[in-house]
Image (cartoon, rainbow, N blue to C red; front, side, top):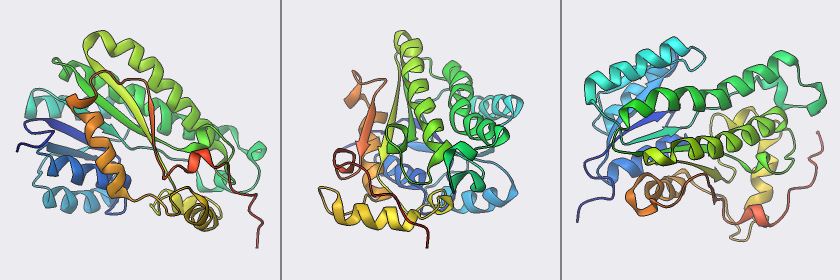
Length: 263
């Protein structure tokens, strides 16, 4: 039987290492027959991304610093020259200065706020703008969010505000692009030990709390997020857009962890 994504081409943006949610999605998409391309930002990430791309049979690895409109445009121009079209885009990009993810939210600096919203939210808008001309037959865009967009999570701080902005952007983009047959959705995964999560103060305690208290009594894996992403990238969900899919063991219905005390 052909895979759900057989004959489709997709770009994965935001892969950092083999523990990334983006890696879980990439593996699942490749298993289902997709041809993949990847982006990186900076020489250090390039050294990590190229070997992972090679594992999935891809030699489409492009530089793309999403803080630069010019670099985004060059990236998608190169992709267009290579492929000619694009079927799906996975936006797994988020960033906040580490010092903004400890202490109280009201101490967020103006520059820290700008950086978090620029990289974590505006990058979805900017990359979508460049991807749309390649999605002439329609397509699917999937981004990654977190429960901190809906509820306060200890030390998530400005990233919670950024994720709320991201979810709003998903809805507005879905409304814009629906007539073109392009769907835009987000996945809200549970706590996962990723490189990004390591920068959140006391993340280990939050991770352990949900492992004990979520309805399924365990945390989410990148493989489970990848499996959930595949239908959103395929024709199976042609009537789903502007939505947030929770892949979190049901922990979003159990409340939030108690305030984590500093040791």
